[in-house]
Image (cartoon, rainbow, N blue to C red; front, side, top):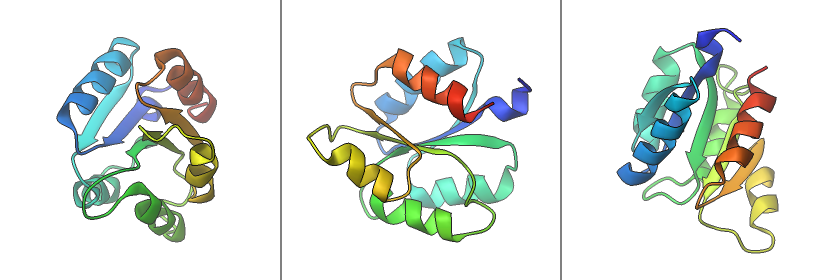
Amino acid sequence: MKAEKRKVLIIDDNYRNIFALSAVLKAKGYNCIAASNVQEGLKILSEDQEIGILLMDMMMPEVDGYEFIPRLRAEEKTASIPIVAVTAQAMPGDREKCLNAGADGYVSKPVDVDELLLLLKKFLK
């Protein structure tokens, strides 16, 4: 797997979540970039053509993942980037809600690292 295909963009408003996810993924050889809101995420996506996957916190102030993911899917440049919803919402129906919003995968917090790594392997072929 080429290094550029292992680049992960994490959009989360909680720096502890970003730190924890980045530390785990970097230890597994992934290059992580983080944004604390969707505006930063959009800027990174527009400037970095090597993003292989997006880990999206679904509950964020201003614009949440449920609003942001359909916007990404509507843009030709970002429509095909795999998106994994990373959320504290783990009630029945929450997975389906995330997938219906356009996410390709779903992981609840606290993140099961093995589950996340399986999703990364699946989408970063």
